[in-house]
Image 1: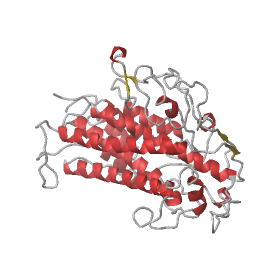
Image 2 (image 1 turned 45 degrees about the vertical axis):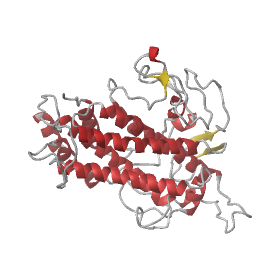
Image 3 (image 1 turned 30 degrees about the horizontal axis):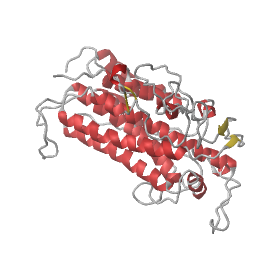
Image 4 (image 1 turned 180 degrees about the vertical axis):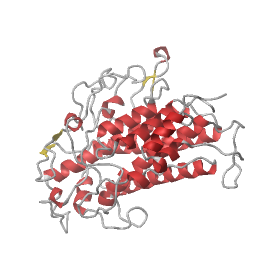
Length: 405
């Protein structure tokens, strides 16, 4: 509780963040502290094992709340344009019919899935903040100071400030082969997992229409059964980019929650992580399945005034390519319908392979790695350095938490 190395206690860090003008969003988050009181919240008694909620527990919950707020922000953008439109999420702003139609090439229910994933992330952030408040700890509200990035100008987008940038993404699609390999990144963090879409991991790509120029040339048919929609190759490429980005985002939470759960002391906090974490895995399973339906197309983003010049090429993943052995050590089986995790080694090779979420080793900096992954993805292009400084400090606190027995 009194770790001298904690940013909760280091005066130099506190002065630094106040000096940088982070009082509202940063210092409030980084000076999270418990107040004396019962472990029950909102007047309801809950089962626990008597172990106190430690500073490490609060650090983990605080970091996860911040990360869920980031996810809430990006999913709201996806839902406004491509999700089912209702008053629950986007205020029934109408959405973007062209973008919705392009996403539905991946699956006819994509709009509903996008809507529901958004609803889930909103609930995660809200619940974690409510729980922190119930324990007398500071809550997280990054949007108060940092939701300043511009919105899409395409039809359907609300014109409000954003935390995340979905228009300059460099997407790591190695998650695809990581789950189709016998290799566990816990044993070899530098294992050369193959990119499902190599071109997405180079240069910058938009996953949402930035303006109506990105949907130009597309036609929505009044009778798609007899007269199919005509969607531009460029718009399809944007939607397919989103499909792989959905899976990239959710695979991080799939492994982050079980990794951090191993550092938790209080049983109730452990229950929270073990309850939220599997929902992230359900998201990932859904999205990697749908991404595999992308059509083989190629597009160069040369839209005047907004294009990045990046070229993306999607190939057919419905059949095995490259190594056809599902137990390849190289993770180079790209077969689209291999959506269950291929068994891999856990703890010790002598125990034999087992199907698991990966990676989950606490020896690696799971929280810091998650933030760095988002940075590398381009989600925070346009944000000031102090925004990522806050996330990295919260991540370090979570990674440094230790289970107290």
